Image 1 (tube, rainbow, N blue to C red):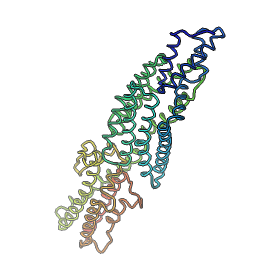
Image 2 (image 1 turned 90 degrees about the horizontal axis):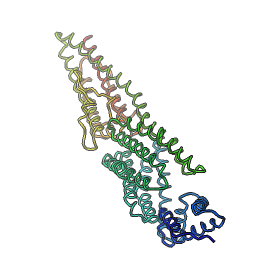
Image 3 (image 1 turned 60 degrees about the horizontal axis):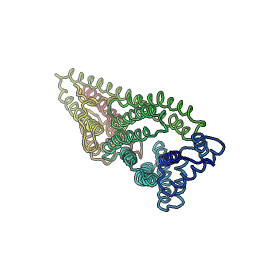
Image 4 (image 1 turned 180 degrees about the horizontal axis):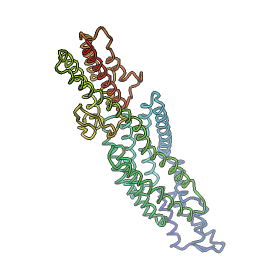
Length: 477
């Protein structure tokens, strides 16, 4: 029977050790088993290289040795079995909770926030640590400790940061920044270095480099998008082009040429690329923009109406400046202008809160401009027009700002009722307009910034209409 040389046994040992078989008894058994199989194949007259290649083909996928180790550890190591079960259960439970939470969030059903919190907590504090423990147990590779830790930290901070961002908790920007730093600066480079060290994938090294560049561009774009920084769209599109047009077709061609059959791993890559990543990126780039486009024309039209109506009322005042009724008209105008300025001040505070961090409002010079008729909100420049916090803080019933606004509106309504020019007509419009700020959606507390600003624009125009009618009544009397 042909026997293997020491050099042949050395090569087999190196190849099996490269599969990160950390269980010492299993390692020796596998080396012995493969050597025996190769010697058996060499009995038919094959050389070592051909016999070894045939044995490897019979073993199946390159990951088969690791699968054998996982099965062995699962059978003999209670601690590993517990970690593995914890990893599987928490991964499935966390993913299901987040999926259901997304559905509930879209449908505006209750408990969405609770499920998001539980799902993120399960993945970040149970699944990620147990996965790190399982990986170490399976490999005991000190060379890959940096890769494992950077992957853990990037995933942990990303899940936590996303939870904080969705729930509008303070500190989300810092946590997402940490996730981006660990992912872009540490995890992806470490993963690339690990892939480049693999001698069995020399033909794929350029693809890995190009793919890493594409992933980094895409992730940086996502990070810029979350933080509302410029160039986010360009970076995401660049990353997608590199991945979908260059790296993925190249990887497909090499895989198709080298492999005799299409593996499930490759099929999952295809599904992930075209069913998840690409549509998700397109939605991220275009969905919010579509929503904004529907709001902006209405808001700009309200601003145009405000300017026209304000000019008309001012022209009436100028025309009757020398008349006996001018003091009365000036009083009406002054009280209306005071209330309009108060509402505009609320708009400014809402925009500044939205553009800044929690507890640290921004000056928002790019979003607010001063005009002859007062402040003007530049709606197309809002970074996050669908944030909910400003409406909660300033317009929802029970908030201090809402109570003060209602007090100002009630004072204005009392002023109107005391005017001698009114002739007992009902001018409760401002109070009704005040009620429309949030009661348009009964029971809803998650009203977006842009909707709240729209309600305030309507209220301001309502006040100008009332002022116009009061001035006309004063003139006719």
